[in-house]
Length: 101
Image (cartoon, rainbow, N blue to C red; front, side, top):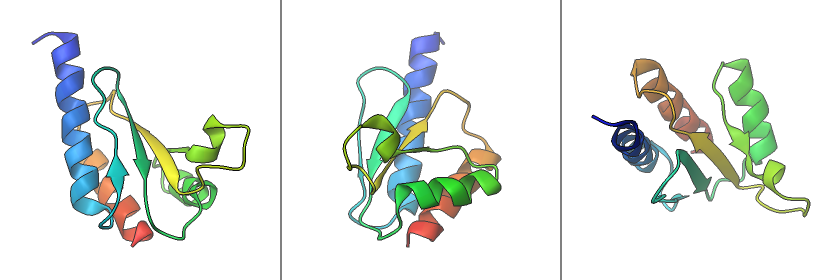
């Protein structure tokens, strides 16, 4: 399997995990290339606060406000799908979903 196909499969798998474990109404991009997912959620939890909580638990996310100079995207995060989806990644997605619920 080629690198591009492998990354695409990982990205699709991560996207499905997010849709399964995050609250209803969560929106997740379906990129045609690359290995980042942009996720917008309806929770009242600010993305910066979610980032702070996640980092303590060794979960890596990028908070939405980091991608703009405007006061936007407080309900958005970016996830990287460039690593293989294993039990640790699945647990992290489940945990993020629980916090957002």
